Length: 285
Image (cartoon, rainbow, N blue to C red):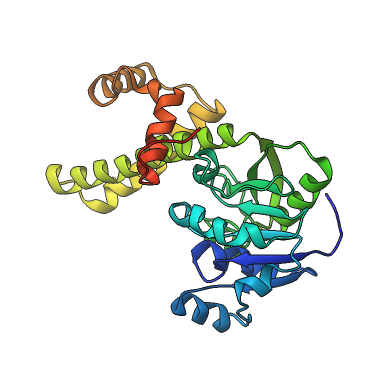
C-alpha cells in the first residue's frame, strides 16, 4: 500500500454506490472530486456537503478515477472518460461484468482495476450497535474486498489498494484475483447461487405462513435460527447434522436442485449470465 496523497475523481458520485464510496473518501486526506449528471444525484451530493464538479474538470489531474456507475452504462461512460485521462491514471470499476465483457474503453497507458466489496461476513463478531446495523459494509462493520488487476504492475496496484481500503472502509483485507475469477465470484457464486438461495428462503417462509398456516413469528424464528446453524455447520464445520437431517437434506436436493446445476461454473454459462445481465447479444473477445 501507499500513504501518498492522491487526486481522486468519483464519476456517478450521486448514485447508490457513488454515495457510499464518496462518504468514506470524504474523510481521507486525498483530494476528491465528485461528478454526477442526474439532477437527483447532484442534489444528493450537495446535501452530503460535497461540491459537484463537471466530469472533464474532475478527471483532469486525477491519479485514480472511480467509475461508480451501473455496468449496463459503464461502456458508454468509459468511452467519454478514458480518452481524457492523463497517462498512468488508474481506472477503478466496482463490478466485474463489464470488464469481463470487454466493454470498457481501453488505453495501453492506463491501469484498470475492478474492486468489489465482500460485505461483512455472516460470521463477523459484531461488537457495537453500529456494526450490527451495518449489514452492507462501508460504515462500521469490517469487510473484505476482492479486486482484479491484469497488468501485474505492483506500484499501481499499491495505489489502487490504498484507495480501495479507503472507499470500502473498514477493510480487513484485499484479495487480488483475475477479472475472470472475480466474474465467477460475482455473479456466479454470490448472485446466481447465494442471493438466489436467500430469495428461495423468503419464498419458503411465505409458503410456510400463508399456505401451511404456521404463525409468522414462529416460522421466522425457526428459519433465522436454523439458517445460522446451517451455515455454521456447512461452511465452518461447527457441528455435524443429525442422520434425520441428512435424509431431509437429500430429499430437498432431489426435489429442488437440478442434477446438472454445476454447469453454471462452465465458461459458456458465465458468458450467458453476463450477456443477460448487460443486455448484450454476445460477449466480444
